Length: 493
Length: 129
Image (cartoon, rainbow over all chains, first blue to last red):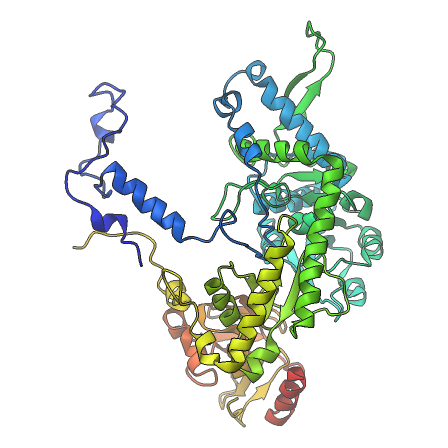
């Protein structure tokens, strides 16, 4: 059943009865700023709005309703407690322009969040201000550039990116005015050290690495890589996309990274998907500390508060004159940061280790059982990190049933599909990340579904090629959607 | 897999080159490349009169799956680009060796390592294993 557009149920003059009353006097807005015509908004009753959006939400796959093993996205459970505490009135009603003395509780939480992130990453300082992962990456590479320029080393503008990287890495380097040098990976999924040695030189600004990589394996020669880059005068950037796999076990700071961004909305379990809001906190070693984006929360220990408690305020451009500056009007997405703070306090230091252990155990369990069932792992000799890759090139070649067909058929089995056709290095790939919050029964059901689809693909390939059958809309014409982008409703003329 | 036209030479980056009678070279991507990319939705072309270096980025092709750089297999000056691709990038999918050509260059040097159709076919067969 497909849902009509809300515009299509519009009737002239229909209104929501709970509309807030007009709270300014007529005539307060100068005539020049008044619009002449009525905006093209749907005219519907409040109940129509509620039902429309409730039905749409019910047609969606979500982590609250379905297993969502979307590789590289860490679609884990977002505990309700984090949400409830972040919505406490003292947090939710705090105005960002209010006096610092009125927001001490919030600032104390942000300070502790900065400290916890330092401790878990092994970095020396943290800024929470980036609004999302991409902005965290931007801040990270902007700091690397600022560092070289501050040293008079202006020609260092080459960023090395392995071919397994997220597409955002080369995009970030380009946005920061750098030149991207791509290096290859070995058949076992590690960075090709010989290619790296050839790529470094006097213009090397740094390298962007994800570890474990998007190939779902840990970069085993990381200490060698950090030697090569540092000896060449470059810095190491850690993309925190896959931090969930090593949380509490290994620290990027100990692997020699100079700068890191974390997707708090992934590893630290705040709601994500659908475009935000996210949080891309950055951490740095000593060399990049002066360049951190502001504001940062500072703890002033002996300001003479009567009860002896600490006082918190902001570090700004005045305190960090070499800062790359501000990334938004205030400080990141406060609500997301609070949820991450509560999550970290709830799970604690030992809990973080268990997160990495169970995320990795679940991925390896899925990989082992799917291999036993006849699926081909892209890196069969490697232990999986928190995710792993299957390649369905055999199925695509012999049965003409490809990865996209499997992904669509999984929807009929009530599973969100894993990531498809990424990373680009592996043909016909499925990148599967179960996360630590799933039970063994759910994993077993997913394995059964994959086996059932493989059998259907042999018995009746055409049936799998035409999946899904049970969703509100079936195969969409994604090529037409990209070629003829149509996002805004327009009234019929 | 379709026949490889005999009058073209090919590169490991899955591009083809055709030597024109006036000394210019027409360049496109191979049938293998368009099949691997999937349905194209956007092509970014260089400017006419722009100089390109051998191995430098010359165009970008974007499909629903991925965006990919097209590197110049030979250095030179761009003398013509296939403007039709702006509205109909799918021409590369439909006719990679004909209507889907990408640029015409006036070369300023030699091409790097190129392959004749048999050698390129052997290269493709080996990739398939």
